[in-house]
Length: 345
Picture 1 (spheres, rainbow, N blue to C red):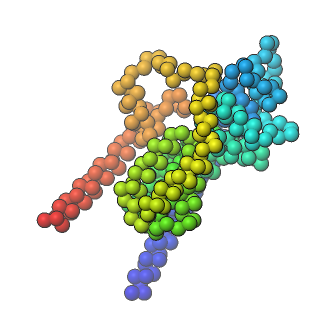
Picture 2 (picture 1 turned 90 degrees about the horizontal axis):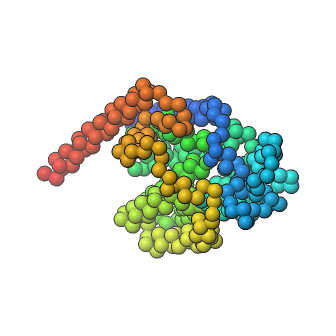
Picture 3 (picture 1 turned 120 degrees about the vertical axis):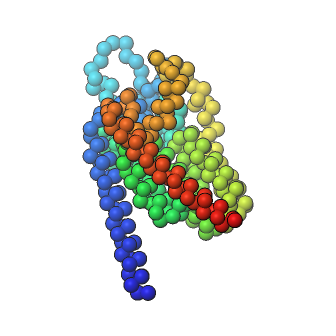
């Protein structure tokens, strides 16, 4: 018996060290690559808004005294435009950041407010900005491991963490100066809290975490609604130890927290912006079938012609690797399905 316990403890220790090694690899990849690419337009926009400057707004509402961009009537040196990417002295208030979001962006303000605080402490260099996203993405790692363990068992933890550490899209969006890594964190935190609520029942701390994570997700990106609805649907179908009163209370309290921002969303989305209507533009040489295939395959191949240089051999290799993983997964599910049939007979 003692020998069995010792073997189990050794196995746990080995698993822990292996997970720490994967985490270290994920961190090194993200930190090492953070200085390899300059900021692109959307990332520059993030920095401008986070420092309290509105860039996309109607000329009728522009207020230079509050940092709004006003198109000059004559050529100006580049340094004059760089001021929109710096903190002012004295510092702009968080309220001015929220105002810039309302005027310029079609996203909620939480990411920009957090980036505002980060840049005050760590500066506005490209690396500092990318490390903010990377830090948030790495915080997803233990949540992914915990969710994998609770939903698919201990054997699912390692492949889940490896895929997150090495996935090209996960690496890229872990460093982009946008809100995507924060969105991941909110989705994973809400998912983990939901699993804990169903397994352990309603505890005040878990309820509070679920509400705060849900509210943070809705204040990070409007598309949070899609995974959130799936999570709530699962809680409705399989509540286990979670009571209906607890779930309804969580949803209502989340809505109350969101109300001050969401009552202004129609006003914000109706505002005229420089890029208004860009979603209606048809890309050159657009083909629906090609676009659909790219949408499906891109998360596995890592190929993205507009964001990073592609390599055909690497992309095909990545697709083959994921295809092998898929085949192995289907085979295991097939074995499990037949096992259940044997039990039923």
